[in-house]
Image (cartoon, rainbow, N blue to C red):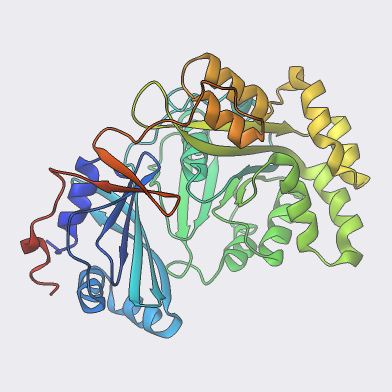
Length: 385
């Protein structure tokens, strides 16, 4: 067993979503969205290198040494999978590790709106899931792909960096490809996918012009394409895609997007009010005739207004969904007000620190750290030191 496995087991025990290792600092866990330092002396650069390099292949070590950063995944039998990012920082090495649940939750378990089940029934087009890092995009996409896999006879290709949720063949045939392990790039894999007879293509991240262009081409040529972007709202997603292209091509891109886009799901995670955990706030944009015209004419600033007036077509704004979560007792009203830019009503102050944490204010910044019962035995790092 690798020495770092002891930390991964502690992550699972404490329901942490992420672990941060940074030279010069103790390990940090993110639990229900809150960062907390473990009661352990700061780790040296040598200790972190020893912990991380023990779980990397020789090829991965060479890649990290050459590029100073690395994305990969790690699996522990009987425990789970972890997404791994290794990087260099001012004091030395760092690493961030995210838990990837082995069981894919259904749309019902995730409380996803019924409209999303309609989006995955379209035979072709582009469906985007957007939001900041850590907003649950991969979880939502995995649930949608699992729904298709469980109910339809399709050929599904996923292109990811790294592979996160593992899909077994059910009614569909699924081929999962990992960048730098099974293909050189998203663009190369997308280009090849068009010759691999897919019905559905999932692009883990649409991060550059070539990938976005190929994804749109695939959607135009009879495939259902799912992709992710780091944007904060459905309307901004449209602008983000168009702005990637040179000015001279943007009119053509607006036309292509107006014809191929089927929907945008924007989401953000918030601390739950009714129990420990987090709840997703969602915004759903569907490509109606009105929306397609606004995209084609370059009037995307009017899309939020259309979303409010055409909610009967399955659209949903953040304001509507967050108000619904507040009324159901799942979300603190002050948090919803802050996110939506509304002035909080007196009496709805921000929530206190979660149970098991202690909070203090220092120079105007709230500091949280794990208290009794969560320290790691120094022996866990004996080999690394």
